[in-house]
Structures are given as C-alpha cells and as structure tokens.
Length: 422
Image 1 (spheres, rainbow, N blue to C red):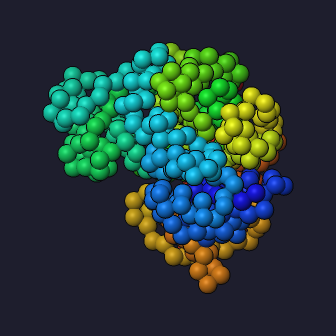
Image 2 (cartoon, rainbow, N blue to C red):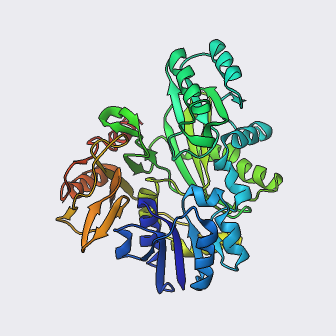
C-alpha cells in the first residue's frame, strides 16, 4: 500500500512511525513532512492548506490511503476532495470538522444536546462583549471562534485583561478572521484530561488518557504553548470517571453529530476538566492532539493502520483496540524563547538511538538535521511505571543537544503527585 500522511509536526512523525509497522505498507509519503520525517517517509514540499493541489497530487501518485492529521486541511475540506477522487481517508470531512473549526458551533451543540460544558455567551460585535464583561465574574475565559494554532484561548484574571483580550481578537484581529466572533465562558477548576478517541460514527473507542503541560516554564509558569510535554495514562482519569465520560460526553457527542447530519469519522479529541460538579468539555478537536499523540500511539498494541482503515469503512466495531498496560512520558525539546521569539538553524546532535524521538521542527540540510521551529523534538519513553518512563525520557533527552535547547524539567511530576494522593 502507498500511504500519504498530511502534516509536518511531531504528531505526524508519531503517526508515520506507527503506520510503518504495518506489513502491507511499502511506501509512505508526507506532505509537507520535515527533516526528521524524511528518515521514515518520502517528503513532498507542498502547502497542506492547498487542499486542491494536495488531492490532485494524491490522485496522480495513486495513493491507496490518506491520513489527514492537522486541523487546517480538515476544516478546509481535504477529506472531501480526496474521497471525491476515490482515495479513502482517515479524518472527518469538512461538515464534521466544524466541531473544532468553530467554537461557537461546538458550544451550541453541547447546549442543545445537554453535554456538560462551561456556561458561556457568544459575541460577533465588540461593544456587547465589553458590556458583558462588566458584569461577569473573574477570572474568565475568552476564546476566538475559529482556528488559531492552538493559541486562541486567553484566561483573563481581571476585567482589564479580559477587555484587552476581547479587543485584541475582535478589533485588532491578532488571530485574523478567527477572532471576528468570540466565546466568553466561565472559568472552570479541576484537573485537565485529554482523551483522544477513534470513531466511525457508529462506534466510539476512547484511547488511553493523557496529561498535557501547556505552560512554557516549570511549575506551570510562563506563556501558554502548543504543549511542552505529556504523560499517559492520566492518574485523574479513573475507571469511574471514564464510565461517566462515556455515558455523558463521548457517546452523546457522537450521536449529536449524527443527528446534525455531520457524522464524524476519524480521531475525535476531548479536552476535559474534572470539575467538582463532574467532567465537563473544555474543547473538542477534530484530530490527534500534539503532543498527546506522542505518548498515546507508543502504547497502542493494535495496528494503527488497521484501525484507521476500519474507521474509514465504518467497521470500527469489528476490530479490538488494545493498549499496553504501561506508562509513557514525552518531553518536548524546544528552542529557547518559544513561544515568543527564538533563533533556529542549529545542528541537532544525537548521542542516543532515535527510537521514541519524534521530530517536530527541523529541516535536513547537507545531511544535517537543523532546528527550524519552536518545538523541535518530542522525546518519548515507555516503561512499566510512570516514574520509570519519566526517568527514561529525561535520560534520552540529556543525550540530545542543539544550541539554545530548552525543555521543562518537571514533566509528569504533577501526575506522580496525583498517584501518591490516590
């Protein structure tokens, strides 16, 4: 089989490494890929947002199956165009990808079908939003309606910060058209849990839970990032919580999308907050999370491509999806200064094997792997216990170097503490 994976980050590298294990795969292409992915797939330099050109390339190159990983091409309808050309895909069509493409859509969906989430109001004009904030309780959460590279959410601690956030989105257009409408919602408290799931619209299979670390600095300080590390499973996600989420959130979301004529097929990501009043949805994503994928897929026992093909054929119920009874930790090695300004172009040196190393932001130049992004590598280890996984991930991280490398030193510590409290 000839497989195409669309995307260019650590998530896509993890997907490609998993797909490579399938004995029926003889060639993997990646659009656009990156310097690290080039070791595991043939990279094709194209813009992932040019979904028409990508679909035409896939047809011309007789691709047998395509995995559309990032949010942008999914929301732009990449799956629709590929399937029109007879290429089966893993990923939702445009009609279903709106669950991430519009936060207003997803909030209204949850309200309509009684799926637990934060109380909220939506606004398409600046002044009514500012007026609403005058009466609102602080802290408060402000979200740009559309896609904003995972950065369109601001937690405002006071009224001034809240007004500045709304103004920057709606008037100053810091997120472009994505911020022309906003959601203002109550601030929830409790442990956060990420749960990715496979679904074909008939069956939904949650993957192993994970815990992300969004802040740039140790002890959850500093700016929000795309994620500085992850561990799996999440200690707060007990069997009891999982059962409640399945009954009140996961299956009701799948059914709601079916009732709306927007059947979701692919990876549906649930960002959850375990509040004192029970689990609530913070956000939906229409694809694998990054860097959650880098700890979830290494724990998957069942063949990933077999699952993806079953989802595309609406046969997920016929396949048994199993995970290892182990733990995983992923430490993100970033360029110092991320997510603000940082320098790039530094050579990456490996004094260790590359097993479990997922490349996010690097280019291959004259046979050397050079840094090219904020998040550069995801270094993952799988062990019998979380404590051992954390230790192994950091040992591997210490054997990889590049100038201005930065990583948090406390990934997984919150999870270890939670295990101790149980």
